Amino acid sequence: MAAQTPIAFIGGGNMAASLIGGLVDAGWRPDQLVVAEPDADRRADLTARYQVRTTADNAEATREAATVVLAVKPQVMETVALDLGPVLREARPLVISVAAGIPLAKLGAWLGMESPLVRVMPNTPALVGAGISALCADAEASAEHRDTAQAVMQAAGEVVWVAKEEHMDIVTAVSGSGPAYFFLILEALEEAAVAEGLDRETARTLAVHTAGGAAALARETGDPSPVLKSRVTSPGGTTARGLEALERGGLRTALMDAVAAAARRSRELGS
Ligand SMILES: NC(=O)C1=CN([C@@H]2O[C@H](COP(=O)(O)OP(=O)(O)OC[C@H]3O[C@@H](n4cnc5c(N)ncnc54)[C@H](O)[C@@H]3O)[C@@H](O)[C@H]2O)C=CC1
Ligand SMILES: O=C(O)[C@@H]1CCC=N1
Image (cartoon, rainbow, N blue to C red; front, top):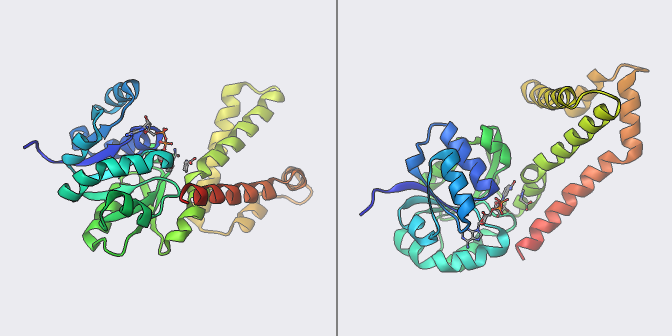
């Protein structure tokens, strides 16, 4: 029998690659990871980047694993889970799903098993160890299973546990999709600076460091956002004018609408 591989990823797309990059940087050996992925170019890319073993065969990867991370699109999860059910029922690894929207009960029914299942919503900053993952487990997952899931996700950043599974939709809308909202803001800041004559590289450096600095300040002081914002806003100064333009332009409402729309989509994906 082949030596046991601790983690098999089913689906080697953007989210799996971000987690794999984070795990490898955190000290996991590439030979402790295997990725099942149908796309040959994607497999070659993952091997070139992380020296992980890949296969086109989901069942083969699953048979060797102590932990299986399901990282396929929600739309194909049913097919993948129905196919893998018999293998998983025999091998009984810990199963972690990172799919948006798919409830644990539905996944369990497709797999034909009750536990141990952990649902996780990670995000792509996992690639550089700066991810945040929200986790919830089914009632039968043991403390050991929870610890294992937490240890895997902690290699890629922070973790929070969510007591009510129904909250995973709003989590998905805030932290799963959230990096894209911030990238849109970075894009806009860069474009504005370039339009005013700054070279692209300087514009990007200023925008990225400002975003990173704001996040670090919020994290390290723990101060509320309105307080942090007021410290930047000198009376009658530039920030006040900028914030007025943002409120007039509806950025606050647009972001709140974005989160509500993404959460609705998460619920749709699971129904
Ligand atoms: N991209 C992100 O920021 C995040 C994604 N997720 C979740 O991660 C999952 C994957 O999303 P992405 O990586 O963005 O999508 P993706 O499209 O980049 O990756 C999905 C991968 O699954 C492969 N695949 C398709 N059919 C398969 C099958 N039958 N067996 C094995 N692999 C198969 C595809 O070839 C592709 O490489 C989704 O369920 C998504 O909701 C969760 C959090 C954040
Ligand atoms: O866009 C999506 O559906 C996935 C889930 C959260 C981030 N990306």
